[in-house]
Length: 257
Ligand code: ADP
Image (cartoon, rainbow, N blue to C red; front, side, top):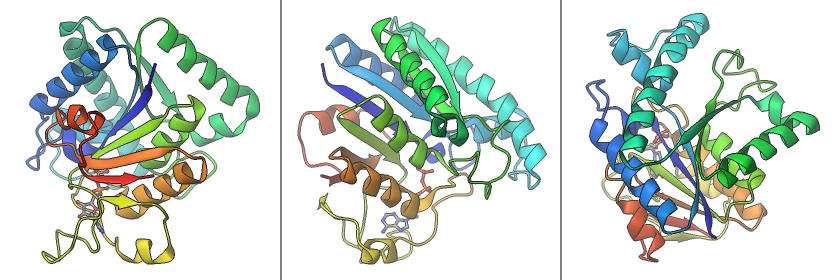
């Protein structure tokens, strides 16, 4: 069976007006469930806890203090998983939740526990849904506990569960020669074989007030995967049906190979 990790960013789950994009979540649940029925093994890494929590609490600005962000994430994570549970149930799938921190995967013992849990969930025919544990990961700058963003987390999960491919869904069609939001002349790269300092030069700034990683963090994730002979596709998550097209071998988004 082919094992695939899918990472979906906040910008694909939350509309620019702050509301939850139920259409995207429903499509995602449909596609992943269908892939499972085709015999593929699926792990989902989902951001969105803070975005969904902001919507629940009707906040229009991301809170500045870390305790506030953690509290909003605690509310939003539950709400988000509730939506996922409902949508995946529609397609007869059972999901399991893994909340991880960096230190967890750096200690060999807990790393093994995480690996075993992922394996067991897959064996039990479930779809693991992974996110960063915002309550324990104290500080954006504290690299002891925090991944910083789910881009790194998804690369790590891809390695931990020996998946063949990471599909990273963002709010942009792929990796361009420059930030296409600012430069309309920017060209989409369809294939990238190596991440160089020049690649990082191409990718400054993030897209939305909800997105945290930015393109540089996606390149860092791709760099890790390429070093481990794994593939990554970066594509637009505004319509998760795109996953079918990617897996059918069409040249969509940017393939890091
Ligand atoms: P997500 O929330 O999906 O993780 P981010 O906002 O973190 O997405 O990152 C995607 C954003 O990165 C794009 O919307 C775009 O504004 C920005 N970006 C910067 N440089 C590039 C580039 N070279 N190619 C594509 N996007 C880029």
